[in-house]
Every structure is written in C-alpha cells, then in structure tokens.
Image 1 (tube, helix red, strand yellow):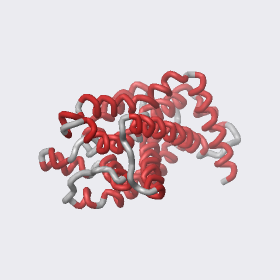
Image 2 (tube, one colour):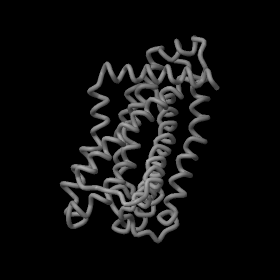
Image 3 (tube, helix red, strand yellow):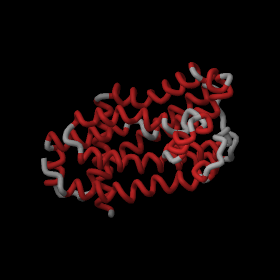
Image 4 (cartoon, one colour):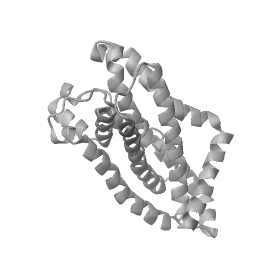
Length: 259
C-alpha cells in the first residue's frame, strides 16, 4: 500500500508538471464551467425562471455537478496518448506498483476538480448565489460532488484504455452535452415530456445536483418520483456503482494493454 501511494503521488506530480508547462488548456478547462453558468444564468435565466436572480440559486448547484463531468475527455486523451506513444509500456517496465499509473492520473484529476469547484463557487458568489445550510451540510455537498467525479474518472480511464486512439475522444466530447442537458442540472423535469423527465431524473448528474441543492438549502426540483425523492441516496449509489464496475475493468484493460 505504501508503494502504491508513493508511486501514485509521483505520477500525479508528472501530470501537474504537464499542466505547469501548458497552463492554457488547463485554465480553459478550469474556467469553462464559469462561462456556462454566466450564459445560462445571464442569458436564459429570465426566460426560464422569470429573472436571473431567481434562477441563479437553482442553476449554480446544478453546474457544480456538471463541472464533475467536464474534463473527462482530458482524462481519456491523456490515458490514450500515453498508451499510443509507448509511455505506458515504459511505466510497466519500471519497478513501480502496477496500479500507480491509473491511480496517479485519478489523483491528479481529482485535484483539478477541487480547483474547478473553487472557481465555480467564487463565480457563484459573484452572481449572488449563497447557501443556507450548515457547515456540515456544505462539506457533505462538496464531498458528494467529488464522489461523483471519482466515479466518472474511472469510467473515463476505462474508456481511455479501450479507445483505439486519441481521435476517438472526440465522440466523448460530443456526448458530454446531451448527458449534461438530459438531467435536472438546468431544468426541473416537470417541465419536460413525461418519458424524457423520467430519463433525466435517473441521470447520475441529476441525483448529485438534487442532493447538493438540498444540502446547500437551495431550491430544487418538484419531486414526486422515487428518483427525485431519493436524490441523496442515489448520489452515493451511482458513483459507488461506477467505481465498482469500471475500476476492475480499468485494471484488467491495463494488464492486457498491448499497443
């Protein structure tokens, strides 16, 4: 375990070094959710909720959840590029823990997610967003957001290991937006057709968005369905399920990697 932790931290440091050497892509990924909340809150808030001020308390927690999905293609690209260029093969030939390559990437991207949440929180404060929950509830909300990111990262790592090349990541970049919009991040599912609202309510992003709205003390969705009424339970169950499925699959794909 100590070897795994030590080697994972070293490889996470390698990713930090890449970000220092090329800060612009990292900053774009960091600040893009801020642009999204400015567009949705400022441009469409009045049309959706009557005024931007009424919409901000609803949309900011939703975009915090959506932020955990953004950048997943970056994880895939890094994993796929390392495999294509032979970097992964070099790592496998070194005397290091076999799980450190994947765990190191996961740690680095979790750290980037913390920075992204901080940027989004400051942007929300600037727009007038506030929470009314206690300190424990607020910490639990951020914990649920990072738990969702942890589950999604293992999905991205597995997809990166299975992708035939970096060009396949473009498909994931296209899918991010349908997954994000088909949720309760921006809208109450009660405003959607019944079948579409049901799909949106079972989206893992919706579960986390609904749970953090409750913990922050912000307005949430109308509810009524099982998924809408059990958002906090689902916000824990979905990420745990993703880790349980995709972490072993990622480890198996890494062991079989031969490019």
